[in-house]
Length: 247
Image (cartoon, rainbow, N blue to C red; front, side, top):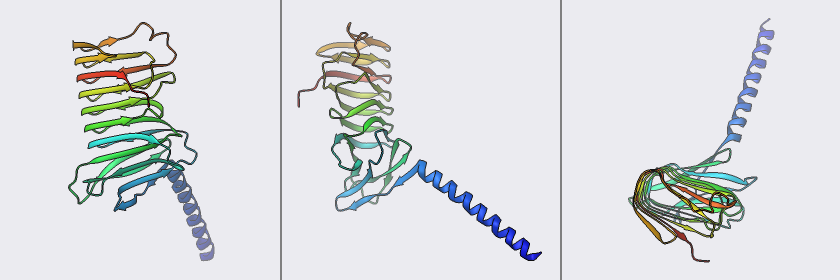
């Protein structure tokens, strides 16, 4: 009888072990942590392979002094996020499904929090900056781009957008002092000052003392297939929208 109990106990432990293994595999498949590589002389650098990734959302969760985002040919990598060696933060990236969640951890250095983000040109990106910053510079003219969202405040935002494919939406939700948006195409642009603005300048025409909810829509926007839609739901001091120089 003791042998039967022992055999039954072993079977139970084997069953529990198999269940635990399945749970671990599922968790790892849906949530993969990416470790820091090159954390030293060249700064704090995190990269991740493209694999089967064709479309993804990049999210910066924490605030910084300066954030720079651009696209480039990264070979087999989907992204590279870095801070300088003397920065007071280092990046940590986790991936869940098609979202890359980037947080910033403290270091023992006292340099400014300057975050450099390079995204692969081969992937279609949605970009969401959820942490505030003194300055945010995004040059996405070479990107395959979905929506862009700023959900926290900034002193200055500079954003360059590629030619739209369909409606290219930009949400300015956190408020800002200065916003400059450069469009790499002559497609029509609609601008909404949801939170009001001290001034809104579109293609050289300036409107001052803009009330909350005011929308500037050119006649051709509604019928256009490819177009820009910029919605400043947070209050801004000034918004300037113009066309980027070629190249």
